[in-house]
Amino acid sequence: MEHWGIVGGGLLGMTLAHRLRQHGKRVTVLEGGDRLGGLAAPWSIGDVVWDRHYHVILLSDTRLRALLAEIGLAGETRWSVTKTGFYTDGKLYSMSNALEFLGFPPLNLLEKVRLAATIFRASRIRDWRPLERQSVVEWLERWSGKNVCDKIWLPLLRAKLGECYRRTSAAFIWATIARMYAARRTGLKKEMFGYVEGGYARILDRFGEALRDAGVEIELRAPVRRVRRGDGDSIRVEYGSDRTADFDRVVMTVPAPVAARACPDLSAEQVEKLNGIEYVGIVCASLLCKNPLSPYYVTNITDSWVPFTAVIEMSALVDRDQFGGHTLIYLPKYASPDDPIFSRSDDDIRDEFVGALRRMHPGFAPDDLLAFQVSRVRHVFALPTIEYSGRLPSTTTSIRGLYIVNSAHIVNGTLNVNETIQLAERMMPSLTDAPADGMPRDGSRP
Image (cartoon, rainbow, N blue to C red; front, side):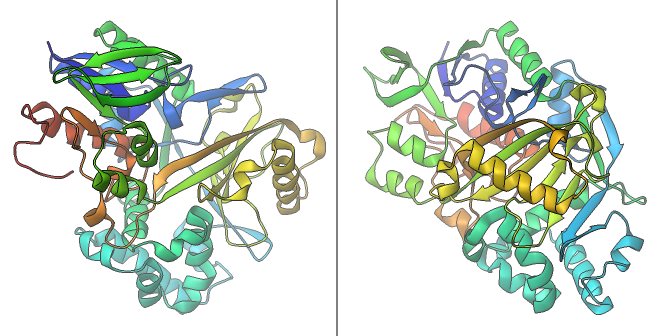
């Protein structure tokens, strides 16, 4: 029986392990952290255990919902109609339906029509490839006009991508709009978001149990140091402080530059391609508060003085009983991996973020804040630059039996759990059908 090693125990690695085991392979997952889940993993904030980063389930997340059914969580998703806020020019507006959109003060009627037309146009595009050859700003200005682009789109792009938006293709905004548009119910056109009680802590615990019950070996606290050619046709993985293991095949699910550093036997061309992928990272503050701030699940922000991307109020979606009767809020800030914010102290970030939140919400009293924690991840998703898919490294490598599959291979979507599961399942045929030389039989790229 072929023995496969999966480096990285996030949802991508877990799904690959799940499918490979179903194909009769012996599978071992090596995860550097103390629990499975990667970016979806939970943590404790105050007395509450919930997701370290904000996640929701959409009605259109068919791959995720199918996986939940496989692991025994079918029918346990709780659905809610959510509201959306917009903070601009120092004021908070609701933009949760068509009537509120028509009354949105920052835009005149013509600009609103052009904005709506842009969203509608993007939602109808099926072939994303031509968009990869266009700048996102040029495409948005053509459809929305410069004023709408300056007032709405550019602040949102900066909030999500920082100044990296200047190198981003129009495929990014298409993928974002397409997913959110699919989240609205036909006819009612209302956002339906869902969650499983207990959050991803419960999902990951159940998924981990399912993997172990199926015979998948899982090693935690096993950070991988090196992956190189072993004896004969094997792949040798060095992990922990002094441990090694030999596998018939290995799939690396870590970020591209991490894979490049860990695999010294890769060809120079492959290392160059892996290191050429630009990433966007995140600094995400979690706040446990006594009382809600607003009725909005997400408040989009266009004012440049606000230091975070948005206000994500989970208790506008999730029953507050899940948080001990309190409110859980996320304040994310997206930035390039070398941004100074990653080196700032928690206290410094707390002072700036909480100060801005109180300016936005004057009723937010100092004693409302019960707990504050900061998560920092330098490599979250690959920046979809111009003609990105043409420069993407193949999942096969110059090392026989070694594959690199990570979120950078999501070329026509946005990084979320459903896309991650879909990537794993899309890669399965080329992995399981690969001949001895490790190349897909059809010679295809991802």
